[in-house]
Length: 432
Image (tube, rainbow, N blue to C red; front, side):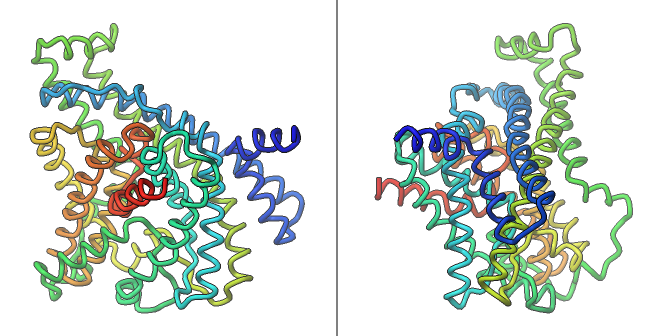
């Protein structure tokens, strides 16, 4: 019994180690060389631990951004520290998340093998964040005392079905965009893409194809998500700081005092770069473990489901419609700024317009929108994406994960998660 307890605490109870074990098994099953097995296992563990470090940096910047804009709108700021948060959530439920992600992938493989939906979902970082957000939703609905295995089993079923059906639903549009059937879209921007296609069909003009126009070379920087994240957050932090300098309220004074001897404007600017740096750190961690777990998964999947289509990250579509990518993001950026003001002035929520989400999802919305409605469709697809993300973030952070991982939902939750989480919450309340 003591041995079982030790294994549970040190393997199933330590998500980074559990992830390393999963990669280790996957590589051993493929009979990889010893050097590759060791390297892959260690990089997966290190990558997972880096995520926690990056999450802390992001939260540090959000603890300035959220009260700053709450003060701008005259709202009562909420302390992020009152939530469980990503780091504490990982410590308690990270092993369940890691195991469910693995079992969900295996269920995806089995469904691809025995159903007509021959798609293998291989976008590892989205697998991780989707599992985390869905886990946060279930834990909040069922209570923090939910058992390890009930949480794992529910997540496994949900994820396996989602990762199988999502590529199938978007494949008709992907086929039109790519002109073939060799790849599929495996990304949580599926709903943004379908919404963009609908907007393009209803309000666009297919004859005005975005790809037939020449885009200014000066917009090339929009393709670098680190740059646009830092630039956008710098703009928002600076605007907020300037407005607070004109205020004499206790909240404004407290925020300005937090800068110490540093200029509050400079302090705010540093927070914007800290936010962008935090996301860059997290993404580096994700790249490390995804770079190892995806090959391990792919090797298993190709042996079980020969001829299955790989469902891949959103950028696989970008080369087919590069102008639509930029137009979709521009539409999403404009929408984000509008909804930041509207949400703050109406429901009293400070929307965090994360450019990582808006770029990748706005791009897919733009590509799908262009396919059905040309230039207008691409712009409207991006704007519709921002609308879905802004209101989705509000409902999720305020009602669905407000006691678990709202800090993560502010920047890592997105289109499909927003639409599916209410359904998952209802299921969790029904079964637990």
